[in-house]
Image (cartoon, rainbow, N blue to C red; front, top):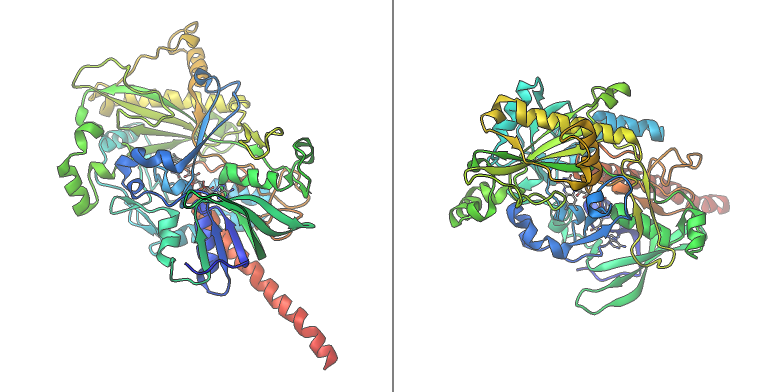
Amino acid sequence: PPPLRDEYDFIVVGAGNAGCVIASRLSENGKYTVLLLEAGPEPHPGLNVPAIVSDYIGGYIRIYESVPQRNANLENGGIAEYPVGWTLGGGTSVNNMVFNRGSPFDYDGWANITNDDGWKYSNMLKYFKKSEDYRGDFPSDQHGYNGPIPVSRPRYAPGLENWLEAGRTLGYSIADPNGPQKISFSPREFSKRFGRRVSSYAGYIRPFLGRRRNLRVISSAEVSRVIFEGNKAVGVRYSTNSTGEIRENNYVRVRKDIIVSAGVIGSPLLLLRSGVGPKTDLDEAKVSVVKDLPVGKGLHDHLVLGLSFVINNRSLIFDRERDLTPEALRIYNTIGDGPYSTSGGYVAQALIASSIATKDRNSAWPDYMLYPIQSPRAPSIFPPSEGIEMAEWEAPVYCGVALGRPKSRGSIKLNASDVDGGPLIDFQFLSNPEDGQVLLEGIQTALKIFEETPSYQRLQARLAPIDMPACQQHEYRSEEFWKCFIRQRATAFIHAAGPCRMGKGEEDPDAVVDSRLRVIGVEGLRVVDASIMPNVVNSNTHAPIYGIAEKASDAILEDWEAEDVVGSFRFRKPYRKWG
Ligand SMILES: Cc1cc2nc3c(=O)[nH]c(=O)nc-3n(C[C@H](O)[C@H](O)[C@H](O)COP(=O)(O)OP(=O)(O)OC[C@H]3O[C@@H](n4cnc5c(N)ncnc54)[C@H](O)[C@@H]3O)c2cc1C
């Protein structure tokens, strides 16, 4: 790698989904020096093989826990686990790779909130296209074909046809999951090439390592503070831990901008520890205040729960023990498909609008997502299938029910008695009752799909009995029962957003960054990642973050190119005077 300098034009904190895009784009034209600091290590190559990610993921995530929630996840004491990627590539090195861009209404809503039409879907489209190398089932002018992130889906997709047929029966169209979102059923597409994961690190950074002398990447380097002189961010302190030898208090200075892309927990935490946040909270934690801003407020996440069903056909599930055979490995290595290419049996999804969307006059804007998981091993956020009684020819499948446009808002705060320890994360799930209503309607639609459509009736699909003592005072499957079930089971979908939300600027009391993602009221500091979304998109989050980061890179380059022109005039003026 190029030698470490004392000072860089740009320092990017966090080589995750957004950070890799920013560091890559800012170093592309060769004019600027860029340092990319990542707290986690190099990712393990095993993370690239979708079916076996769970064997490796443990060493490459950090798991936070929420404070006990009053209305959600009660079966786990209200504590929602929140894992984040802790490795080069961040979330994109550990996630399930489901690629969904979200609804045009999501982005048009951000344009309204920020008063900046640059965020409208029609203006974001070029950035989505720039990030994408589309190989999916729905080619159109909505897609890019030369970007760093390949988007495709394996042909191996057990149960996909049943799902799509059920959608058609219920009157839904089958649509592109990554084009402008519609109320529809779809196959799922993923950020994979040849059945292998392509993370932000693999797509945006690795091809240029050693080739760009102006780009330096350091892994296992955790930034502890942004350092200010007055209200100007001038550098960062970080510790390194590459060879097991910890070196604290390294310092590096910045000439132009520090871009904080440390993720939805890491970014607000770093800002708060550095003195940017609500004055009362910082005073309580004895952190001296650089700028009083609502950092940490506005945290929210999609809320998800799993329903377990049983079907009569074991060939329609991915069963790891049965399916990962030497022959399957041969197929995977030859054509990049087959059981090794599946992200745990994720094959399809549906996006639907509830009565709440209609009440809000947004009936074309879906607000919940349903997705089948064709596997006995559900993600850890769902209960295991072991307890389900079934015949040997039967198989368990799950249906994920996810709230897409949550209205409840929570917060992330420093723990005042341990500023450098874990934060206090409070999603305030279901504090807005409309969120529970949307989930209830989601459950009802899932039941309709599995119990009332011929494609699942042929599979003799049935709901696995729910044994939930906390809800047994309610009639089984009554509305009250489901409301109780939601409070017991619903948990974080790991798509959190909002604690550094963007807004109109200084006059907007809820905003931390302006629409060019500059931290309000300080100089030389930006935030670019999931935490800037004022309202989370109604979709999985990694495809939208590629678009956000591409747009932000353009804004940063534009701003500094304009500044450099002004700067050169500032420099020349005295010459003219003296001349
Ligand atoms: C298990 C899991 C499954 C998921 N599945 C999907 C899916 O299928 N599809 C989808 O679209 N989304 C999925 N997501 C969500 C999605 O991946 C994330 O929302 C998204 O990648 C977050 O991007 P980001 O840029 O905001 O942050 P991240 O990608 O999390 O990047 C932040 C980076 O900053 C680093 N960091 C943090 N603090 C510091 C510090 N102080 N100093 C230096 N570095 C720091 C972290 O290690 C990390 O690498 C999933 C997430 C997880 C965890």
